[in-house]
Image 1 (tube, rainbow, N blue to C red):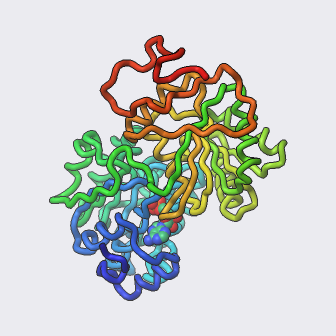
Image 2: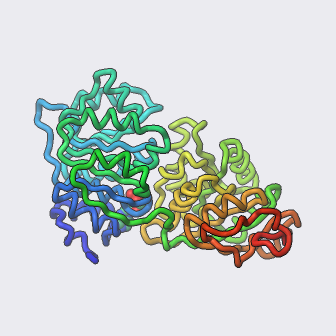
Image 3: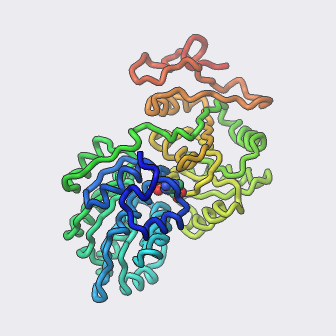
Length: 411
Ligand code: AMP
């Protein structure tokens, strides 16, 4: 185990950058990927967000990347990522590094005007961070070429597949004709990701930090069984009891996010909602306010689960159990980041037990139940039995055995 960034082969200049970023020891994905990337290898890395993966590729790439000639417009490095929030997170790290390495960084995402992006492209850039749609738009408008790109990074490849971006990614990679190195980062290197993306890599090395279904060890997870009608009250009571001040609440829909935020504000919790119906500037403002501590609670939908990079979130609430078990991992990945401890609390309504079961199977663990003392739970809630199994192959759990004797019974 290498405890020092110094041992990874990064230059002296990069050691200063690491001090600027406030990092002391490399995370496992950094420890494993940085030497390979510095050696010029193609790398496929399974690392979920929150493991330090952004720096794992940004630091070595920018340490060895040259600078474009006066005549050329670049970019020399292209980083493709699925969401605006992730793009901005990468932009922040790359811009900090670029101040020391003299690389010009530009981020192009949809939902904002073309003018400033076009002007910056005309002036020339070394590193381009982009979401697939806007990137292809700029290429189609003949405002950008990718023929000088030497290093291509595909970030959150599994998410890009899920979001239907893969045809766009294929088009983009076909245009990066002179690339010398390709790096693929994905929360999991599932069979689907490997089949689709492996042909893009040349003689790759694979780095696996988190297998499918692992969550950060630093996150303390509990479920709170509750009737749906009582979720708003329970949330307020837990927040009051725990005195939470750095909280993200995830809801299933945009309207639930709005109504939840409204109620919390009414009760005096400084809260904002972020979801796809809010404008880019509203989303950015909410994230900045949250980071600065002007608001205590963010209420968000899954669209944003991967892109929220706030380092010291104390509690993540799943107001609704996510129906896609992978989303659970991404949601709770907002807390317990880079070694800090965090709490993930999931409200489980009577009709959400099967989604909970899928999550527990993916994690291969039973998430313990927590009841708030003094809260008047309704009889209609269903409390899963503590002796239930998280294993996949078992007799059907919900086939009419809910009452008494079943693995999940009413209390
Ligand atoms: P990422 O996985 O790139 O989303 O990073 C998650 C968080 O970990 C970010 O807030 C980073 O600033 C932080 N981070 C990354 N590397 C380190 C490190 N070596 N030490 C401490 N924090 C880090």
